[in-house]
Length: 79
Picture 1: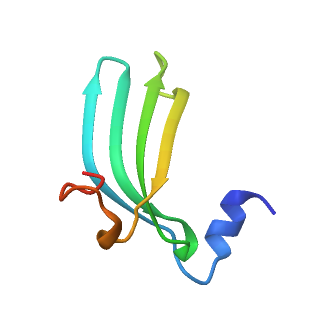
Picture 2: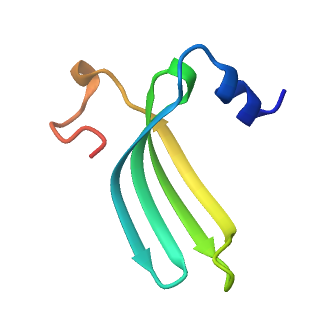
């Protein structure tokens, strides 16, 4: 089963909350909160580069689990 098939069939839906999005030429930068099939919230930063036909040519990302608020080292959290 592919990851896309797994996420589509999971009993808990995957959610994405976009916080910020920026475009600069052929690149798009996304900052958001993901919850893959109820596994817990993760903050993510994605960078996409599009080719001349508007298709995604490259994708980079970094993700980190959002800790409990009591474990935050400052009041800013991940944002």
